[in-house]
Image (cartoon, rainbow, N blue to C red; front, side, top):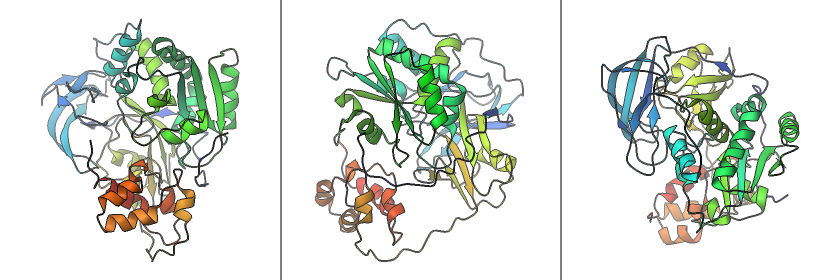
Length: 427
């Protein structure tokens, strides 16, 4: 087993046995026109329009974008400016639900018979990486096989963040969809080998997938050690294949394509029913949640306040999109669940630990998967020394947070790394 540095975290997978159930339909949803990396969509609807489930309500002509569909049926009550968690502003469509969940009559399963029709279908369904990064999936598929031939499909089912069990439930509840999705991608993308990677803290999922793939020679189940950040793209590529994705490279440059397990499963379901990405399975957990912790299918656009009320999380002081290591703090509970939301975590303690002086213990270096030197990056950032930051390879940082977690002085090293990357001009 190829192995990079990392840290051991308490798993806190308290919802792993919670089967996914449908979350109650909200009275209204707010659907931002930017839910992915790349260009935001333009709204295709206006105030007063009636919409149905799966109807396209946003799209863009930009290559790096993905269409957005209504998760509910009802009436558009507003198209308004919306402040995203990253500080940028986009349009958002507000829909008052009618309680009927009428499916758009125009939806049909796509016709997929070659590589280009698969890519077109993936774009049409609005799919982005469901592991949290939000990279439009059709863009990932749209590489040039003559220039960057891909021989290995790596399916990321590591789910190494504490608390989150949404991908685990995908493995346990939709194992056949996962396998069919893998075979579909392999067939039309011409990828001969697949490595389905699962951390060893999910033994029942490993056993199930080995049993299901026993007669399929092109799918190899890879058991990974339970060490964070095992699910990070470059880390899982190295763990599964021994290949190194260098600075500025994509996995395809090393003959690898990485897809989240829920992403590949959704591709298969869309090929069968034509229903685009309109809901997310999320884990709802945290010590501030006193009731109804679990995994839920939530319509995209559902406000986080609806979940907090469902869990009676009145004492929550910190609420996260995603996990405690790489998740993003919410500034407002009226923010909605989006395509990239795999968890909502609510905690009672929102206090940050007191920061003290660096004692140069080197723990940040020893835990970094890529051997970066966060203490030196911090010094270069404070001096605004762009050339030194380049020499220190700060652009390799994936903001996993291992350095901040390991630092006995509680210095915000991961945050500083991210700010430092912003000083380097992008090509």
